Image (cartoon, rainbow, N blue to C red; front, side):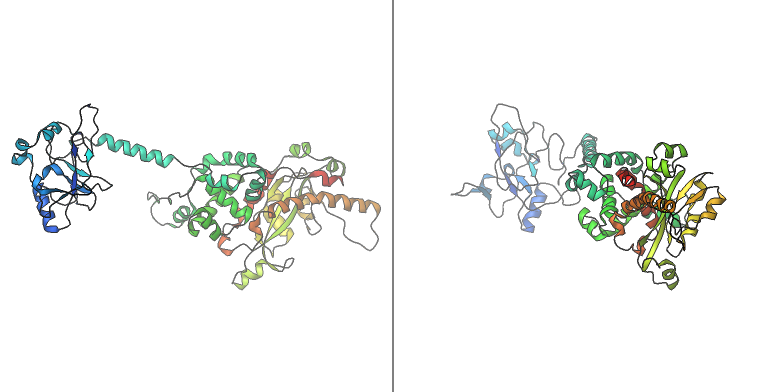
Length: 481
């Protein structure tokens, strides 16, 4: 409250290593009567303002500044109190030092002012006072507080850096089964292998709201748009994203779990969807011919040795748009609902090696295959296994590839060779169906995708497909049946 000398103030009790007994000083709080309080302030030569404010219960004046006639002692408790009209009058500037007692001379001080966070009314405090005189108008010398300010800044930075790492993650994910349910990673080790691979660059990501402002801003390039301050640890943000896509928790639930607003949840989920889609999209997942051949199961080597990829389409439900045109484009005849449609390619070893973007469900399999870009990855002599609904033989012939589909039904009965071929192709096609099931086990796809995420659904789709590869190889024993 009041400014005092940094090394000569008695605003707080002093500690002393002297073996001599120190005097006991009591302190009296300021009176509540305004007229008496003003007389006190005038007596101690202080004015209330920015640097000095009298606070009830925490502002005191030393009892040595009052005469003995103004001090009374309670007969039962022994506590000291002042008379109603008592005003401090013993100071060095009015020759108080000439009349002070021997005990006061031992203290070698004249003025004592005390202000503490905890009120100490008329309490005796053991005080060891310095020898140099001081007064209530004293100010710390220049630079006396610089070291303290530097220490405070250092401690503030230390507190800011002290975080409980993975506190929320540790509470939710204890066993490998917990990690598999809440994140879709098979165990704790795989989760942290993935996290350590994305953490270095994740520390530099900008929130989606800033990216949107930069994209829509018409200001000059020199103008810096600050990113919203991060309210959570990076790993908790990633865990929030996992709970959103893997468990399918809604924004309101995530906001309650992480104690943030729903807008913060939306911003984090969109940011991480775009970030992971960009990072994982830079990984080369399309396998070369040599890689496919080295990892090809025996059944493929026997029945379809030149297969490069197995493809199939899947549909994801979305909310019904109000516009009639958009509703008709996204309405699926296969599923009586509005959906998005995407294509997935799987290598014979079971790994997802191709992911298309999502299209309106009204698009045909043939047109989707053409627009997906997979034709540009195929090489002469490659074989592609697909369902009978993929009428893409002409498209594959243009790139000198071959389509393998089950034979179409005809008037005559299937021959034994055709039957064996149908069974072989069906057993091999199971791989892509299993891969699609893994992707759809991310529970965000259990309910229709809200239209508010329409601009982010492609990123979420690619993230789920890419992270599905971290679940390990598919069970290839199904091919031996």
